[in-house]
Amino acid sequence: MTIKVAIIGRPNVGKSTFFNRLVGKRLALVDDTPGVTRDRREAMASLGGIKFLAIDTAGLEEEGDNQLSARMRAQTNIAIELADFVLFMIDARAGVTPLDKHFAEILRRGRVPVILLCNKAEGRAAEGGIYESYELGLGDPVPISAEHGEGLSDLIDAFDKMIFDLKLEVEEEPDEITSKSVYIDGEISDEEAEATEEDNGLPLQLAVVGRPNVGKSTLVNFLLGEDRQITGPEAGLTRDAIGVTYFYEGREIRMFDTAGLRRKAKVMEKLEKLSTADTIRALNFAEVVVLMVDATQPFEKQDLSIASLIVQEGRALVIALNKYDIMENRQEAMKDIMDTLEHSLPQIKGIPIVPISALTGKGVDKLMPAVFEAYRLWNKRISTAKLNKWLAATLAYHPHPSIKGRRIKMRYMTQIKTRPPTLAIFCNRPADVATSYERYLLNELRWDFELPGVPIRLMLRKGDNPFAKKK
Image (cartoon, rainbow, N blue to C red; front, side, top):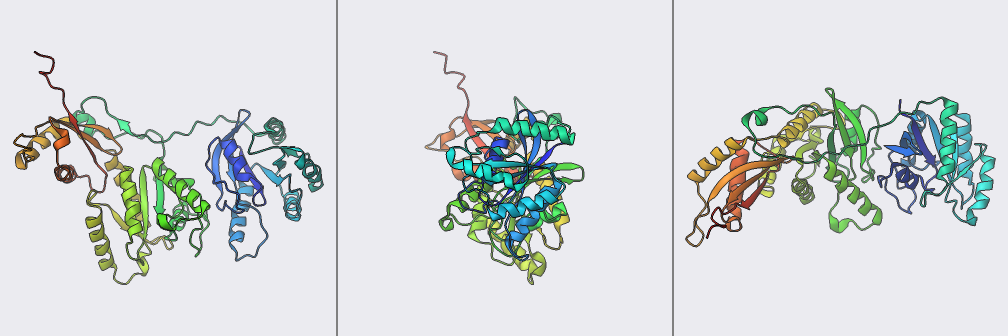
């Protein structure tokens, strides 16, 4: 069983910085502003050859039950209950504060073992805070520097002692594998194209994106069946792109809840810029993207910009029309959205639209089948023989117009890559092929091979001249 370790402490003591060092990646957002982390984040970490699950949490604060900090505190309490032991972090330069004493008393009464960390311990300015930390009653402190990586050897000794005392089993964890495009060598036969791909054991990477306050975290919570993400009426609650594991009909899905994307001109603060960059990073690693749209608001330009970004990245797209249950003219709203997509995104026709209610769960059962269908089309292979027959028939029906009296000859076509489907046409003058004719070929491909809502990339290449080496 995997060892679970939660990192807790008051705001701005360096928890996320230390989490990133343990994980070896810049997963959590880090800024000088207190309270950057809100949702708990989990990732596999390593320290001295010990593999464990690290849990980054929000800063502990004392507020009323109706405040945002109370919801953040609830997520931290869940992390403490899940953990085998806790890393309680204080700021050695600031010394022991009354808030540190309050939460240290709570931890002493609890059942979860604690390792006390004194962060920012580089330099002589931290000596006073290290000595003060003994009064917390949590044992000998471990001075570290999360920013510079100092003191990790002492922490490894504390880890070994804790694991030995608790009799925990250390297991080797496999490295995380991200999805990559699949390249195809040579021609594709009909048998290879029609064969269904076997499950390779990797989780499907799914990202939920959209404008702020459209219900992304609410949808993730409903699918998981628990309050995993912080939700509320306030816009912009989610800041980090949080990845959670979800199983649907036996298939593992790695689902990412992301921060809302606003128009670039409105993003002024540094923290929001970091959140936007984290969302785009999650989108780049995703295989299928669910774009959440608020049905009670018009289909805005920002929604189209996000959809266009998804198409440019070559990801399979599914639109979830949230809050559809409280609308009056549902059919008219659906028709308006479909017309807007038809005119604004002509390069990708047939995007699936699923009306849902993330709060009540109405229509959510139709979302995952649409996601898997988009994923299947995203991985579709077409045999080379069928492509060349289609190319000959398409050119015979509507050939490319001559350029300066010279005909453009398209001789051969094959699929060179999936995820998304990428096809190459070899012709004598690829630079002279009109953009409108490329759109014609893409639309015919989408229609004839049944690829609705999937980005298709078409590459024009110049074939070798067989007479170039002859005199």
